[in-house]
Image 1 (cartoon, rainbow over the protein chains, first blue to last red):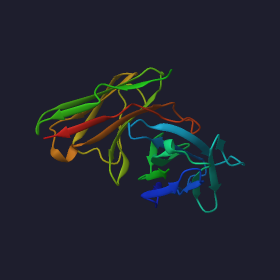
Image 2: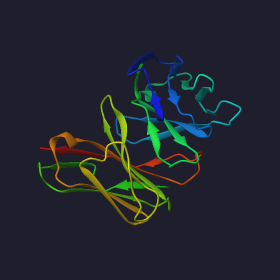
Image 3: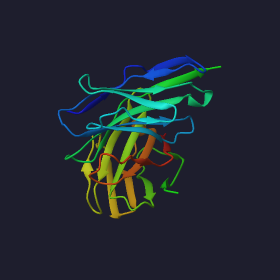
Image 4: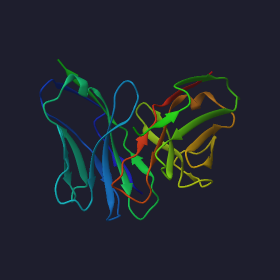
Length: 115
Length: 114
């Protein structure tokens, strides 16, 4: 069965430091996509970054990058130069090609940025 | 601006009531989803739909049903609300068959069953 594991329930990071949020996934499908979402205290889910299983390069979007290690089945989110506004819940998610289109989420990591 | 709108932000209902949570999207997406979010459990899929009148059970469908009579609208129904259904409910939509497309979420409905 497909699964997403986020092992860090919570993290505290000093402002301006880089932070890595861990995500491992489990699937036997060769074609899949990995997403990261941010959920601030207001509750809305904000899409951050996407990585496809066949993408040769790691995805980057501004201060966000995805450290994709296919053999290890990991897709860690890296936030450079963290800001107070990065304090939020972060979810890693998996979708599968050639299957149903459902999206599987991890349990999330709550990130606290300290001033 | 693309949008997924949930009918209520906060809802309080009594045990045993029939509860309707409505979700509307304006992006002409085929796929729509209902998730439940609880602390420490992440987002768990209740039901999803590929098209009008189509529905598939997710991981926790017990106690819920859904309706999709029109493409833009996906309703979640709690047939007889119970206190263990107190939770945050999130609706989402996406395009089909393309793993490169993210899901768009509504603002969430925080349901309290008393």
